[in-house]
Length: 253
Image (cartoon, rainbow, N blue to C red):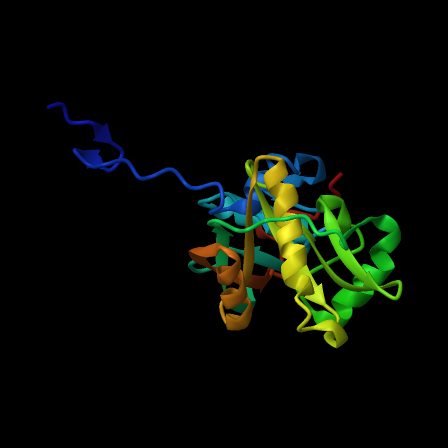
């Protein structure tokens, strides 16, 4: 029997390759969403009016953190989704929320006759609904990331859900929200299943994120056929006031 030598030493098994969902923003911005990518070195992000998500490499080094600081600007607060461990000296953690990532494991996806496709003309109503329901970040150009569906009552938008991150072969369901006056009618469930149906029609797999403390939402998603894939963290940190290596912020196109 031959023994395969690996970086860990003779006879040690090679470390498993990272899953595409371990760093979904990086996989999105270097894959299907590459047209949105703003880059400095190995750090990539969405335009600030599209999504707050950004991505560091799987194992960021000091240069990557310096590039992130230069991209963000002195003293700017930046999201660090999925980052574990310590941030470098000079960075200050400002937000830490434990989260979960769930993936399709037999979701009964189905179209919905009442759901309508939402687009740029609907953004003011979408932003108003998000402001009243707080499902998570939704910005003026977030609608460009994928398909967004809504349900109207009396002409008013009362529920919506859509697509956000897009790693190869996967699409995240996000911005799931319902007007408080219409909760309990099953609208969010119907829209999640309808968005999942559209994802499946592209031969891709739905997934989603939520706060670990949002146990009601987790129970709902699990009842629909999602399963927990991993626990993650949603962090934000403030960049140093003085940029490393005297780097200066640069415009990105």
